[in-house]
Image (cartoon, rainbow, N blue to C red; front, side, top):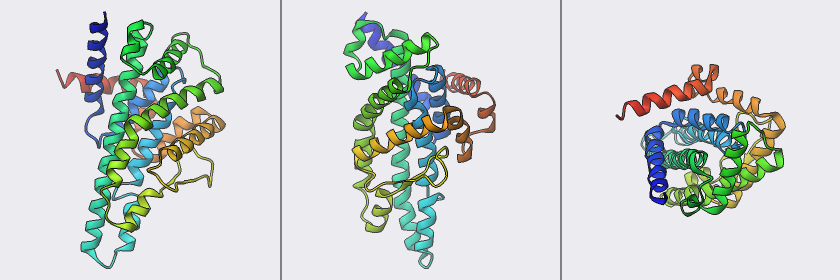
Length: 269
């Protein structure tokens, strides 16, 4: 039984790796993260907040995005220097996408593994106890078509967020930040301003140090609280404002994600 569970978990990770695509394929990962949120009956809030985080980063760190435009403005008089700084930023953007890809693989495989086999006691040897317990609560509520109360969902969000930040995100951010030899660009990357598309007008989170795990976690909790305030339907509809996802996704998001998954897996056969 234990061997069967281990094999199934690895199968799901291979499936998630295919669905994750290349680091730049953030739109397809965002669509399937939202599907996890839907499948959980709105209880796996980390998946939905992670969707916004991915799309915000996609726009912010790109050379054609917010930071890229600042670099263009700063070095407009020196094309070679501008090109060099854009190259450094692109390296960090690629690192961000790689981290996002890893988070998706974790989130997808862990959720569906627990959904399938979470009640088996042997799963405790595969997933961390606190993460397993959180996902068991999420999948149990989803199966019963129950929406947990805000306090419970916030606690579950905390557990899944903490695990991903400490296990996957923190090492990658640290690795990418270490590559910068430009004080100005390093300062810009470490002190981004975050405004997810569902935030109330004028609401912005200014980071003092983006590489600080505790600060990222605190701001992520604030993102959850704002989502609760504005309502999760608005959180979903606000995804359109990033202008990254296909219009078809917003018509029937669950069907869009299922079709996308089928096509991606079919192409690997």
